[in-house]
Image 1 (cartoon, rainbow, N blue to C red):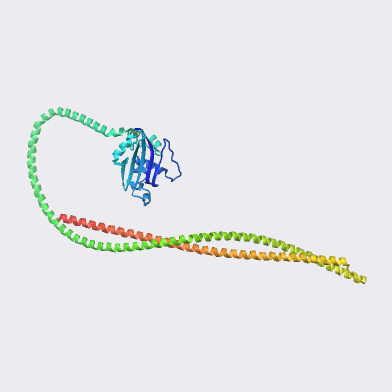
Image 2 (tube, rainbow, N blue to C red):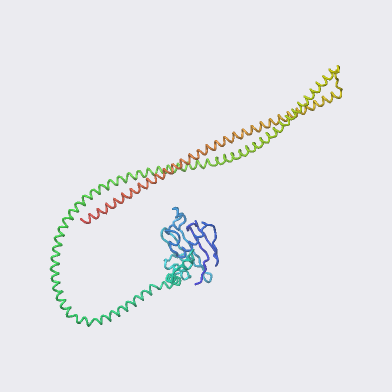
Length: 478
């Protein structure tokens, strides 16, 4: 029957959480995606719904096919995969295979069927689960090429369906061989009749001898029974002693059982205590995790502020360097002007001294002309203004430098405070992590102790069960 796989529906199967409707599938469909995206699990879903065994689905148990079961956290008690085939004429046929716990159910168009019926219906569509003719797995082609002729013949028989007739063929072949053996046996029997006639006389003599031996055998049997009767009475006496000893052992076992039950009660109390302590530790862990989560935004915000303040500090350092550079340039200009002023003053003083000396030598005083005096005062005022301007610029630069230095000091102080707070928060976070680690270690130790207590309890229960079995056996022997 010609058919086309149209849709695949999966629900809670392996990595597919919830319900997924995949399709419509085309005659040529490629499944692509990165590693871990579910390609292999999609192929496992197709293999599963086509009747593939669990060993070929990369799991140990059927229940591991349920989403989350591989990590011990199944989200559901069941999972299913449905393959929808489009038949000739446009009709659809749905094959569903479901996992419930450690068993699987099979449905065709919503009706529950047996596994054999399910596989036969698939074979009608040309899908042989035993022959695996519906999927070519990785390495299958190479494996087929490496098979020897006998293995390849078996593979072809499975694919063609002739393997299903093997049991009937073997049965008929065995019947044929048996018929041949019976024929040969009849021939040999006919051939041996003559020899049997010759041996009849010898058999008669042998029969008489057998009768004599049989009479002797009966006598020996009577003697043997008498011997057994004697030893049975002796064994009964020994068994009675053994029963009395078993009764004594039974009383000891009963006492041991009572003591074991008391120990079991004590262990149950300790287990309850450990359970309460574990619950309290889990609560402490949740509180610490909550506290860490609350402080994490503050830590991140403080870290961002530190980064911002570091950037501002770097900017302030650059501004300070530029101000220092400008200040040094102004100081160089001031020193140069002061040097020029000193040179002018020195020249003026030398000139005045020379004029005075010349006047004294000539016996008369030198009087400056009015134009010269005005020029002198003009130069003097210009020099005073220039000097005042340079002093004002120097004072402004000094104030800017002081302001920049204050801002830099404030930024460095805030940076130091934030770094200190960060170190403090880091220490608090480390302490919280250490506490969480200690609590986890304590929980692990408590779980180990609890498992040990459970193991002791199981041993005690086993001893009690063994004691009960021994009591039952002793009572049956009595």
